[in-house]
Length: 193
Length: 394
Image (cartoon, rainbow over all chains, first blue to last red):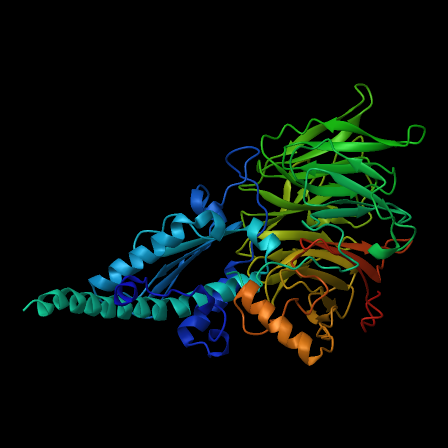
Protein backbone atom coordinates (compact mmCIF):
# COMPACT_ATOMS: atom_id res chain seq x y z
CA UNK A 1 0.00 0.00 0.00
CA UNK A 2 1.01 3.61 -0.39
CA UNK A 3 1.49 4.10 3.32
CA UNK A 4 3.89 1.20 3.60
CA UNK A 5 5.84 2.55 0.61
CA UNK A 6 6.40 5.89 2.30
CA UNK A 7 7.23 4.57 5.70
CA UNK A 8 9.72 2.07 4.36
CA UNK A 9 13.23 2.92 5.48
CA UNK A 10 15.73 3.75 2.74
CA UNK A 11 17.62 0.64 1.70
CA UNK A 12 21.16 0.72 3.01
CA UNK A 13 23.24 -2.09 1.66
CA UNK A 14 26.59 -2.79 3.24
CA UNK A 15 27.20 -5.30 0.51
CA UNK A 16 28.33 -2.43 -1.67
CA UNK A 17 31.61 -2.53 0.18
CA UNK A 18 34.14 -4.63 -1.63
CA UNK A 19 32.23 -5.42 -4.81
CA UNK A 20 32.56 -3.01 -7.72
CA UNK A 21 35.01 -0.63 -6.18
CA UNK A 22 38.10 -2.84 -6.42
CA UNK A 23 37.86 -2.68 -10.17
CA UNK A 24 37.82 1.12 -10.10
CA UNK A 25 41.22 2.69 -10.42
CA UNK A 26 42.47 4.58 -7.40
CA UNK A 27 42.68 8.33 -7.59
CA UNK A 28 45.99 9.95 -6.59
CA UNK A 29 44.40 10.90 -3.27
CA UNK A 30 43.54 7.30 -2.49
CA UNK A 31 46.88 6.04 -3.77
CA UNK A 32 48.61 8.37 -1.32
CA UNK A 33 46.37 7.14 1.49
CA UNK A 34 47.01 3.52 0.57
CA UNK A 35 50.79 3.81 0.46
CA UNK A 36 50.92 5.74 3.74
CA UNK A 37 48.69 3.17 5.42
CA UNK A 38 50.77 0.27 4.11
CA UNK A 39 53.82 1.77 5.80
CA UNK A 40 52.06 2.85 8.98
CA UNK A 41 50.38 -0.52 9.54
CA UNK A 42 53.77 -2.20 10.24
CA UNK A 43 53.10 -2.72 13.93
CA UNK A 44 54.79 -4.88 16.52
CA UNK A 45 53.92 -6.07 20.01
CA UNK A 46 55.39 -3.46 22.34
CA UNK A 47 54.93 -3.60 26.12
CA UNK A 48 54.29 -0.31 27.89
CA UNK A 49 57.36 1.61 29.04
CA UNK A 50 55.34 3.49 31.63
CA UNK A 51 53.12 0.91 33.29
CA UNK A 52 54.55 -2.49 34.09
CA UNK A 53 52.85 -5.60 32.72
CA UNK A 54 50.61 -3.46 30.54
CA UNK A 55 50.38 -3.16 26.78
CA UNK A 56 48.81 0.07 25.56
CA UNK A 57 48.45 1.55 22.08
CA UNK A 58 51.17 4.18 22.02
CA UNK A 59 49.19 6.42 19.68
CA UNK A 60 46.36 6.66 22.22
CA UNK A 61 48.37 7.22 25.37
CA UNK A 62 50.92 9.56 23.71
CA UNK A 63 53.21 9.09 26.72
CA UNK A 64 56.48 8.72 24.84
CA UNK A 65 57.27 10.91 21.85
CA UNK A 66 59.89 8.52 20.47
CA UNK A 67 57.30 5.79 19.95
CA UNK A 68 55.11 7.95 17.73
CA UNK A 69 55.45 8.54 14.03
CA UNK A 70 54.81 12.02 12.60
CA UNK A 71 51.07 12.36 11.91
CA UNK A 72 50.26 12.68 8.22
CA UNK A 73 47.20 14.50 6.91
CA UNK A 74 46.27 13.74 3.31
CA UNK A 75 43.65 16.28 2.24
CA UNK A 76 41.83 16.19 -1.06
CA UNK A 77 40.34 19.62 -0.37
CA UNK A 78 38.92 21.52 2.61
CA UNK A 79 36.11 19.02 3.02
CA UNK A 80 37.83 15.68 2.61
CA UNK A 81 40.89 14.61 4.51
CA UNK A 82 42.49 11.56 6.10
CA UNK A 83 44.76 11.83 9.14
CA UNK A 84 47.10 8.90 9.72
CA UNK A 85 48.81 8.78 13.10
CA UNK A 86 51.19 5.87 13.48
CA UNK A 87 53.14 4.48 16.37
CA UNK A 88 55.10 1.37 17.19
CA UNK A 89 52.13 -0.78 18.17
CA UNK A 90 49.01 1.00 16.99
CA UNK A 91 47.69 3.04 14.09
CA UNK A 92 44.91 5.60 14.18
CA UNK A 93 43.22 6.61 10.91
CA UNK A 94 40.72 9.47 11.04
CA UNK A 95 38.53 10.29 8.07
CA UNK A 96 36.78 13.56 7.36
CA UNK A 97 33.86 12.80 5.07
CA UNK A 98 32.69 15.33 2.47
CA UNK A 99 29.78 17.35 3.88
CA UNK A 100 28.60 20.22 1.74
CA UNK A 101 25.59 21.28 3.77
CA UNK A 102 23.83 20.72 7.06
CA UNK A 103 21.73 17.86 5.71
CA UNK A 104 24.82 15.86 4.79
CA UNK A 105 26.33 16.83 8.13
CA UNK A 106 23.39 15.26 9.96
CA UNK A 107 23.51 12.16 7.77
CA UNK A 108 27.24 11.71 8.37
CA UNK A 109 26.71 12.12 12.10
CA UNK A 110 23.94 9.52 12.11
CA UNK A 111 25.93 7.13 9.96
CA UNK A 112 29.08 7.31 12.06
CA UNK A 113 27.23 7.02 15.37
CA UNK A 114 25.44 3.95 13.97
CA UNK A 115 28.83 2.35 13.35
CA UNK A 116 30.49 3.67 16.50
CA UNK A 117 27.78 2.20 18.73
CA UNK A 118 28.68 -1.18 17.27
CA UNK A 119 32.44 -0.59 17.51
CA UNK A 120 32.99 -3.81 19.51
CA UNK A 121 31.80 -5.93 16.62
CA UNK A 122 33.58 -3.76 14.13
CA UNK A 123 36.90 -4.56 15.90
CA UNK A 124 39.06 -1.87 14.29
CA UNK A 125 36.70 1.07 14.78
CA UNK A 126 37.36 3.68 17.45
CA UNK A 127 34.31 4.50 19.55
CA UNK A 128 34.82 8.23 19.26
CA UNK A 129 36.12 10.00 16.22
CA UNK A 130 39.04 12.40 16.68
CA UNK A 131 38.30 16.15 16.83
CA UNK A 132 37.76 17.61 13.41
CA UNK A 133 37.08 14.20 11.85
CA UNK A 134 33.98 12.12 11.36
CA UNK A 135 35.14 8.57 11.89
CA UNK A 136 38.30 7.00 13.29
CA UNK A 137 39.86 3.56 13.17
CA UNK A 138 42.29 2.24 15.74
CA UNK A 139 44.31 -0.72 14.50
CA UNK A 140 46.61 -2.38 17.03
CA UNK A 141 49.25 -5.07 16.58
CA UNK A 142 46.73 -7.64 17.87
CA UNK A 143 44.66 -6.93 14.76
CA UNK A 144 47.61 -7.16 12.37
CA UNK A 145 48.57 -10.47 13.99
CA UNK A 146 45.23 -12.03 13.10
CA UNK A 147 44.33 -10.16 9.92
CA UNK A 148 46.25 -9.45 6.75
CA UNK A 149 47.75 -5.97 6.73
CA UNK A 150 47.15 -5.34 3.05
CA UNK A 151 43.52 -6.37 3.34
CA UNK A 152 43.00 -4.02 6.27
CA UNK A 153 44.49 -1.21 4.17
CA UNK A 154 42.26 -2.20 1.23
CA UNK A 155 39.25 -2.11 3.53
CA UNK A 156 39.97 1.41 4.73
CA UNK A 157 40.64 2.70 1.21
CA UNK A 158 37.39 1.10 -0.01
CA UNK A 159 35.57 2.63 2.94
CA UNK A 160 36.80 6.09 1.99
CA UNK A 161 35.87 5.50 -1.65
CA UNK A 162 32.38 4.25 -0.89
CA UNK A 163 31.40 6.57 1.92
CA UNK A 164 30.76 9.57 -0.32
CA UNK A 165 28.41 7.66 -2.60
CA UNK A 166 26.63 6.20 0.44
CA UNK A 167 26.04 9.63 1.95
CA UNK A 168 24.79 11.09 -1.33
CA UNK A 169 22.48 8.06 -1.77
CA UNK A 170 21.12 8.67 1.72
CA UNK A 171 20.64 12.35 0.93
CA UNK A 172 18.70 11.57 -2.24
CA UNK A 173 16.56 9.14 -0.27
CA UNK A 174 15.82 11.85 2.29
CA UNK A 175 14.71 14.20 -0.44
CA UNK A 176 12.52 11.65 -2.20
CA UNK A 177 10.98 10.53 1.08
CA UNK A 178 10.27 14.14 2.01
CA UNK A 179 8.52 14.63 -1.32
CA UNK A 180 6.41 11.49 -0.90
CA UNK A 181 5.43 12.37 2.67
CA UNK A 182 4.39 15.88 1.62
CA UNK A 183 2.37 14.46 -1.28
CA UNK A 184 0.55 12.01 0.97
CA UNK A 185 -0.09 14.71 3.54
CA UNK A 186 -1.75 16.96 1.02
CA UNK A 187 -3.90 14.10 -0.30
CA UNK A 188 -6.12 14.42 2.78
CA UNK A 189 -7.06 17.95 1.73
CA UNK A 190 -7.84 16.93 -1.83
CA UNK A 191 -10.26 14.10 -0.97
CA UNK A 192 -12.56 16.45 1.00
CA UNK A 193 -15.03 18.29 -1.12
CA UNK B 1 31.77 -6.97 6.17
CA UNK B 2 35.41 -7.82 6.42
CA UNK B 3 35.48 -9.31 2.94
CA UNK B 4 38.02 -11.98 3.55
CA UNK B 5 40.23 -9.83 5.74
CA UNK B 6 40.79 -12.58 8.32
CA UNK B 7 43.53 -15.13 7.60
CA UNK B 8 41.83 -18.40 6.78
CA UNK B 9 42.58 -21.36 8.98
CA UNK B 10 45.38 -22.65 6.83
CA UNK B 11 45.87 -26.34 6.51
CA UNK B 12 49.50 -25.39 5.90
CA UNK B 13 51.91 -28.05 7.02
CA UNK B 14 54.32 -25.53 8.46
CA UNK B 15 51.90 -23.76 10.75
CA UNK B 16 52.75 -24.48 14.38
CA UNK B 17 50.29 -22.19 16.11
CA UNK B 18 47.20 -20.35 14.94
CA UNK B 19 48.08 -17.36 17.09
CA UNK B 20 51.62 -16.95 15.86
CA UNK B 21 55.13 -17.82 16.98
CA UNK B 22 56.96 -14.97 18.71
CA UNK B 23 60.36 -16.58 19.20
CA UNK B 24 62.21 -19.87 18.88
CA UNK B 25 65.52 -21.57 19.62
CA UNK B 26 67.06 -24.89 18.65
CA UNK B 27 69.32 -27.08 20.74
CA UNK B 28 72.82 -27.99 19.64
CA UNK B 29 72.07 -31.08 17.55
CA UNK B 30 68.73 -29.69 16.31
CA UNK B 31 66.82 -32.53 17.91
CA UNK B 32 64.57 -30.16 19.79
CA UNK B 33 63.03 -26.78 19.12
CA UNK B 34 61.69 -24.49 21.82
CA UNK B 35 59.17 -21.91 20.70
CA UNK B 36 56.54 -19.61 22.09
CA UNK B 37 53.12 -19.79 20.40
CA UNK B 38 52.37 -16.11 21.23
CA UNK B 39 51.31 -17.01 24.77
CA UNK B 40 52.92 -17.31 28.17
CA UNK B 41 53.99 -20.90 27.51
CA UNK B 42 57.06 -22.37 25.90
CA UNK B 43 56.55 -25.47 23.79
CA UNK B 44 59.47 -27.80 23.16
CA UNK B 45 59.00 -30.15 20.23
CA UNK B 46 61.08 -33.14 19.30
CA UNK B 47 62.10 -32.58 15.72
CA UNK B 48 63.28 -36.09 14.81
CA UNK B 49 66.08 -34.36 12.97
CA UNK B 50 63.70 -32.65 10.57
CA UNK B 51 63.65 -28.93 9.98
CA UNK B 52 60.08 -28.78 8.69
CA UNK B 53 57.13 -29.05 11.01
CA UNK B 54 55.79 -32.13 9.25
CA UNK B 55 58.78 -34.16 10.51
CA UNK B 56 58.32 -33.18 14.12
CA UNK B 57 56.32 -34.96 16.79
CA UNK B 58 52.69 -33.80 16.68
CA UNK B 59 52.49 -32.42 20.20
CA UNK B 60 55.16 -30.66 22.21
CA UNK B 61 57.20 -32.94 24.44
CA UNK B 62 57.54 -30.32 27.16
CA UNK B 63 55.34 -27.34 27.94
CA UNK B 64 57.04 -24.85 30.23
CA UNK B 65 54.55 -22.59 31.94
CA UNK B 66 56.28 -20.40 34.53
CA UNK B 67 55.74 -17.09 32.76
CA UNK B 68 52.52 -15.11 33.16
CA UNK B 69 52.79 -12.86 30.10
CA UNK B 70 53.83 -13.50 26.52
CA UNK B 71 57.35 -14.89 26.20
CA UNK B 72 59.32 -12.44 24.12
CA UNK B 73 62.56 -14.32 23.61
CA UNK B 74 64.10 -17.79 23.98
CA UNK B 75 67.78 -18.67 23.69
CA UNK B 76 69.28 -22.12 23.98
CA UNK B 77 72.89 -22.25 25.10
CA UNK B 78 74.70 -24.85 23.02
CA UNK B 79 77.61 -24.99 25.44
CA UNK B 80 75.62 -25.82 28.57
CA UNK B 81 72.20 -26.96 27.21
CA UNK B 82 70.55 -24.35 29.40
CA UNK B 83 67.42 -22.66 28.11
CA UNK B 84 66.94 -18.96 28.72
CA UNK B 85 63.55 -17.34 28.39
CA UNK B 86 62.33 -13.84 29.08
CA UNK B 87 58.88 -12.40 29.02
CA UNK B 88 56.78 -9.26 29.28
CA UNK B 89 56.17 -10.14 32.93
CA UNK B 90 59.60 -8.63 33.85
CA UNK B 91 61.09 -12.03 34.55
CA UNK B 92 63.65 -14.28 32.96
CA UNK B 93 64.15 -17.95 33.75
CA UNK B 94 67.11 -20.21 33.14
CA UNK B 95 65.84 -23.73 32.59
CA UNK B 96 68.08 -26.74 33.17
CA UNK B 97 67.11 -30.19 32.07
CA UNK B 98 66.83 -32.86 34.73
CA UNK B 99 67.58 -36.17 33.01
CA UNK B 100 66.20 -38.37 35.77
CA UNK B 101 62.87 -36.60 36.13
CA UNK B 102 62.66 -35.79 32.41
CA UNK B 103 61.69 -32.25 33.28
CA UNK B 104 62.94 -28.74 32.74
CA UNK B 105 63.63 -27.05 36.07
CA UNK B 106 63.24 -23.27 36.07
CA UNK B 107 65.51 -20.98 37.99
CA UNK B 108 64.28 -17.42 38.37
CA UNK B 109 66.79 -14.74 37.45
CA UNK B 110 66.77 -11.60 39.61
CA UNK B 111 66.86 -9.09 36.80
CA UNK B 112 65.84 -6.12 38.92
CA UNK B 113 63.94 -4.53 36.06
CA UNK B 114 60.54 -2.98 36.57
CA UNK B 115 59.27 -3.30 32.98
CA UNK B 116 59.00 -6.01 30.37
CA UNK B 117 61.98 -7.90 28.96
CA UNK B 118 62.13 -7.80 25.17
CA UNK B 119 65.07 -10.03 24.20
CA UNK B 120 67.59 -12.28 25.89
CA UNK B 121 70.79 -13.77 24.54
CA UNK B 122 73.45 -16.10 25.95
CA UNK B 123 77.04 -15.00 25.51
CA UNK B 124 79.16 -17.23 23.23
CA UNK B 125 80.82 -19.01 26.18
CA UNK B 126 77.50 -19.51 27.95
CA UNK B 127 78.69 -18.09 31.26
CA UNK B 128 76.57 -14.95 31.12
CA UNK B 129 73.60 -13.52 29.28
CA UNK B 130 72.14 -10.15 28.38
CA UNK B 131 68.47 -9.16 28.62
CA UNK B 132 67.11 -6.18 26.70
CA UNK B 133 64.20 -4.53 28.49
CA UNK B 134 61.54 -1.82 28.38
CA UNK B 135 63.04 -0.40 31.56
CA UNK B 136 65.71 1.23 29.39
CA UNK B 137 68.42 -0.97 30.93
CA UNK B 138 70.23 -4.12 29.91
CA UNK B 139 71.04 -6.44 32.82
CA UNK B 140 74.02 -8.75 32.26
CA UNK B 141 73.57 -11.85 34.37
CA UNK B 142 76.04 -14.43 35.57
CA UNK B 143 75.83 -17.37 37.95
CA UNK B 144 76.81 -16.88 41.58
CA UNK B 145 78.17 -20.21 42.79
CA UNK B 146 77.98 -19.19 46.46
CA UNK B 147 74.27 -18.42 46.40
CA UNK B 148 73.44 -20.72 43.50
CA UNK B 149 71.47 -18.22 41.54
CA UNK B 150 71.78 -15.88 38.57
CA UNK B 151 72.69 -12.31 39.48
CA UNK B 152 72.43 -9.20 37.31
CA UNK B 153 74.65 -6.20 36.83
CA UNK B 154 72.87 -3.46 34.92
CA UNK B 155 73.92 -1.36 31.96
CA UNK B 156 71.99 1.90 32.07
CA UNK B 157 73.02 3.86 29.00
CA UNK B 158 69.75 3.77 27.06
CA UNK B 159 67.12 6.48 26.77
CA UNK B 160 64.20 4.29 25.74
CA UNK B 161 63.13 0.66 25.40
CA UNK B 162 65.93 -1.62 24.25
CA UNK B 163 64.48 -3.90 21.59
CA UNK B 164 67.40 -6.17 20.80
CA UNK B 165 70.81 -7.26 21.96
CA UNK B 166 73.59 -9.37 20.41
CA UNK B 167 76.94 -10.60 21.73
CA UNK B 168 80.33 -10.18 20.14
CA UNK B 169 82.18 -13.46 19.51
CA UNK B 170 84.83 -12.41 22.05
CA UNK B 171 82.26 -12.72 24.88
CA UNK B 172 83.01 -9.15 25.98
CA UNK B 173 80.84 -6.71 24.05
CA UNK B 174 77.17 -6.39 23.31
CA UNK B 175 75.47 -4.36 20.64
CA UNK B 176 72.02 -3.03 21.47
CA UNK B 177 69.28 -1.36 19.47
CA UNK B 178 66.11 0.25 20.68
CA UNK B 179 63.43 2.86 20.30
CA UNK B 180 65.78 5.75 21.13
CA UNK B 181 66.89 5.43 17.47
CA UNK B 182 70.44 4.46 18.45
CA UNK B 183 72.56 1.39 18.07
CA UNK B 184 75.27 1.11 20.71
CA UNK B 185 78.28 -1.14 21.27
CA UNK B 186 78.69 -1.51 25.03
CA UNK B 187 81.31 -3.35 26.98
CA UNK B 188 79.98 -6.16 29.16
CA UNK B 189 83.43 -7.28 30.25
CA UNK B 190 83.57 -8.98 33.62
CA UNK B 191 86.98 -9.95 34.95
CA UNK B 192 86.10 -13.30 36.41
CA UNK B 193 84.24 -14.48 33.32
CA UNK B 194 86.06 -13.14 30.29
CA UNK B 195 89.44 -13.94 28.81
CA UNK B 196 91.90 -11.07 29.06
CA UNK B 197 93.47 -11.68 25.64
CA UNK B 198 92.37 -9.54 22.73
CA UNK B 199 92.68 -11.48 19.45
CA UNK B 200 90.70 -8.84 17.56
CA UNK B 201 92.97 -6.06 18.78
CA UNK B 202 89.93 -4.07 19.88
CA UNK B 203 92.05 -2.34 22.52
CA UNK B 204 93.30 0.01 19.81
CA UNK B 205 89.85 1.12 18.62
CA UNK B 206 88.08 0.90 21.95
CA UNK B 207 90.49 2.01 24.65
CA UNK B 208 87.87 1.51 27.37
CA UNK B 209 86.96 -2.00 26.25
CA UNK B 210 87.46 -3.53 29.70
CA UNK B 211 85.25 -1.10 31.56
CA UNK B 212 81.90 -2.67 32.23
CA UNK B 213 78.96 -0.60 30.98
CA UNK B 214 81.08 1.76 28.89
CA UNK B 215 79.53 2.77 25.56
CA UNK B 216 82.27 2.02 23.03
CA UNK B 217 80.43 3.30 19.96
CA UNK B 218 77.06 4.82 19.22
CA UNK B 219 75.39 4.95 15.81
CA UNK B 220 72.62 7.44 15.13
CA UNK B 221 72.21 6.83 11.40
CA UNK B 222 69.02 4.81 11.66
CA UNK B 223 66.86 7.83 12.62
CA UNK B 224 64.10 5.35 13.38
CA UNK B 225 63.46 2.48 15.79
CA UNK B 226 66.23 -0.10 15.66
CA UNK B 227 64.44 -3.43 15.52
CA UNK B 228 67.32 -5.88 15.50
CA UNK B 229 71.10 -6.03 15.71
CA UNK B 230 73.58 -8.73 14.72
CA UNK B 231 77.29 -9.39 15.00
CA UNK B 232 79.31 -11.21 12.35
CA UNK B 233 81.19 -14.45 13.13
CA UNK B 234 84.56 -12.71 12.78
CA UNK B 235 83.63 -9.99 15.25
CA UNK B 236 84.55 -7.12 12.94
CA UNK B 237 81.16 -6.44 11.41
CA UNK B 238 77.76 -5.45 12.70
CA UNK B 239 74.37 -5.07 11.13
CA UNK B 240 71.36 -3.23 12.48
CA UNK B 241 67.93 -2.42 11.10
CA UNK B 242 66.00 0.82 11.06
CA UNK B 243 62.24 1.13 10.82
CA UNK B 244 62.63 3.36 7.78
CA UNK B 245 63.19 0.22 5.68
CA UNK B 246 66.91 0.65 6.17
CA UNK B 247 69.69 -1.76 6.97
CA UNK B 248 73.01 -0.50 8.27
CA UNK B 249 76.35 -2.27 8.24
CA UNK B 250 79.28 -1.34 10.46
CA UNK B 251 82.88 -2.25 9.76
CA UNK B 252 85.14 -2.23 12.78
CA UNK B 253 88.90 -2.47 12.71
CA UNK B 254 89.98 0.83 11.26
CA UNK B 255 90.52 3.99 13.25
CA UNK B 256 86.79 4.43 13.71
CA UNK B 257 83.78 2.32 12.82
CA UNK B 258 82.50 2.90 9.29
CA UNK B 259 78.78 2.71 8.65
CA UNK B 260 77.13 1.84 5.34
CA UNK B 261 73.40 2.40 5.05
CA UNK B 262 71.13 0.81 2.50
CA UNK B 263 67.47 1.57 2.03
CA UNK B 264 65.14 -0.79 0.23
CA UNK B 265 61.78 -0.14 -1.33
CA UNK B 266 59.75 -2.65 0.69
CA UNK B 267 58.45 -2.69 4.23
CA UNK B 268 60.77 -2.52 7.28
CA UNK B 269 62.76 -5.49 8.52
CA UNK B 270 62.26 -6.97 11.99
CA UNK B 271 65.08 -9.50 12.19
CA UNK B 272 68.62 -9.69 10.89
CA UNK B 273 71.32 -12.33 11.16
CA UNK B 274 74.76 -12.82 9.70
CA UNK B 275 75.19 -16.12 7.93
CA UNK B 276 78.86 -15.63 7.14
CA UNK B 277 81.27 -12.73 7.27
CA UNK B 278 80.06 -11.40 3.96
CA UNK B 279 76.37 -12.28 3.86
CA UNK B 280 73.40 -11.16 5.92
CA UNK B 281 69.75 -12.28 5.92
CA UNK B 282 67.10 -9.78 6.92
CA UNK B 283 63.34 -10.21 7.01
CA UNK B 284 60.29 -8.56 8.46
CA UNK B 285 56.99 -7.13 7.35
CA UNK B 286 57.59 -8.15 3.74
CA UNK B 287 57.32 -11.78 4.84
CA UNK B 288 60.28 -12.66 2.67
CA UNK B 289 63.91 -13.13 3.79
CA UNK B 290 66.27 -10.84 1.88
CA UNK B 291 69.97 -11.53 1.41
CA UNK B 292 72.60 -8.80 1.44
CA UNK B 293 76.10 -9.58 0.31
CA UNK B 294 79.45 -7.90 0.59
CA UNK B 295 82.14 -8.62 -1.96
CA UNK B 296 84.88 -8.98 0.62
CA UNK B 297 84.80 -10.15 4.24
CA UNK B 298 86.10 -6.69 5.16
CA UNK B 299 85.14 -3.32 3.85
CA UNK B 300 82.06 -1.19 3.46
CA UNK B 301 80.63 -2.40 0.15
CA UNK B 302 77.26 -4.07 0.65
CA UNK B 303 74.49 -4.69 -1.80
CA UNK B 304 71.10 -6.35 -1.92
CA UNK B 305 71.51 -9.79 -3.43
CA UNK B 306 67.98 -11.12 -3.66
CA UNK B 307 64.89 -12.52 -2.02
CA UNK B 308 64.93 -16.05 -0.70
CA UNK B 309 61.22 -16.70 -1.19
CA UNK B 310 60.53 -16.68 -4.91
CA UNK B 311 56.84 -15.83 -4.30
CA UNK B 312 55.33 -18.26 -6.76
CA UNK B 313 51.64 -17.63 -7.23
CA UNK B 314 49.59 -20.30 -5.56
CA UNK B 315 48.06 -22.55 -8.23
CA UNK B 316 44.27 -22.45 -8.19
CA UNK B 317 42.45 -25.73 -8.33
CA UNK B 318 40.41 -26.40 -11.44
CA UNK B 319 36.72 -25.97 -10.80
CA UNK B 320 33.67 -27.28 -12.59
CA UNK B 321 31.03 -24.81 -13.76
CA UNK B 322 28.66 -25.89 -11.01
CA UNK B 323 31.18 -25.47 -8.22
CA UNK B 324 32.21 -22.08 -9.61
CA UNK B 325 28.59 -20.89 -9.53
CA UNK B 326 28.06 -22.35 -6.07
CA UNK B 327 31.15 -20.60 -4.72
CA UNK B 328 30.01 -17.32 -6.22
CA UNK B 329 26.70 -17.48 -4.35
CA UNK B 330 28.47 -18.60 -1.23
CA UNK B 331 30.82 -15.62 -1.42
CA UNK B 332 27.94 -13.23 -1.98
CA UNK B 333 26.06 -14.65 1.00
CA UNK B 334 28.90 -14.93 3.49
CA UNK B 335 31.22 -12.11 2.46
CA UNK B 336 29.24 -9.74 0.24
CA UNK B 337 31.63 -10.35 -2.66
CA UNK B 338 30.93 -11.03 -6.30
CA UNK B 339 33.86 -13.36 -6.93
CA UNK B 340 36.34 -15.33 -4.89
CA UNK B 341 39.24 -13.06 -4.01
CA UNK B 342 42.88 -13.79 -3.43
CA UNK B 343 42.90 -15.53 -0.07
CA UNK B 344 46.57 -16.08 0.55
CA UNK B 345 49.79 -14.14 0.10
CA UNK B 346 52.26 -15.45 -2.45
CA UNK B 347 54.99 -15.87 0.14
CA UNK B 348 55.27 -18.92 2.39
CA UNK B 349 54.84 -16.70 5.43
CA UNK B 350 51.40 -15.11 5.61
CA UNK B 351 52.39 -12.44 8.11
CA UNK B 352 55.58 -10.78 9.34
CA UNK B 353 58.67 -12.85 10.09
CA UNK B 354 59.74 -12.40 13.72
CA UNK B 355 63.02 -14.29 13.97
CA UNK B 356 65.71 -15.87 11.82
CA UNK B 357 67.69 -18.77 13.25
CA UNK B 358 70.81 -19.69 11.27
CA UNK B 359 72.15 -23.25 11.41
CA UNK B 360 75.88 -22.79 11.83
CA UNK B 361 78.54 -25.21 10.70
CA UNK B 362 80.90 -26.71 13.27
CA UNK B 363 83.30 -23.76 13.52
CA UNK B 364 80.50 -21.16 13.44
CA UNK B 365 81.69 -19.44 10.28
CA UNK B 366 78.98 -20.18 7.75
CA UNK B 367 75.28 -20.97 7.90
CA UNK B 368 73.94 -22.07 4.53
CA UNK B 369 70.50 -22.79 5.91
CA UNK B 370 68.23 -21.05 8.38
CA UNK B 371 64.82 -21.28 9.95
CA UNK B 372 62.30 -18.46 10.22
CA UNK B 373 59.32 -18.10 12.49
CA UNK B 374 56.52 -15.64 11.93
CA UNK B 375 53.56 -14.10 13.66
CA UNK B 376 51.36 -16.15 11.31
CA UNK B 377 52.49 -19.23 13.24
CA UNK B 378 54.55 -20.68 10.41
CA UNK B 379 58.03 -22.05 11.18
CA UNK B 380 59.87 -22.94 8.03
CA UNK B 381 63.29 -23.88 6.73
CA UNK B 382 65.26 -22.14 4.00
CA UNK B 383 68.26 -23.45 2.07
CA UNK B 384 70.20 -20.65 0.42
CA UNK B 385 72.01 -22.79 -2.12
CA UNK B 386 68.71 -24.31 -3.27
CA UNK B 387 67.30 -20.79 -3.54
CA UNK B 388 70.09 -19.98 -5.96
CA UNK B 389 72.51 -17.98 -3.82
CA UNK B 390 76.17 -18.64 -4.42
CA UNK B 391 79.47 -17.37 -3.03
CA UNK B 392 78.07 -16.52 0.37
CA UNK B 393 80.81 -18.33 2.22
CA UNK B 394 83.97 -16.48 3.14
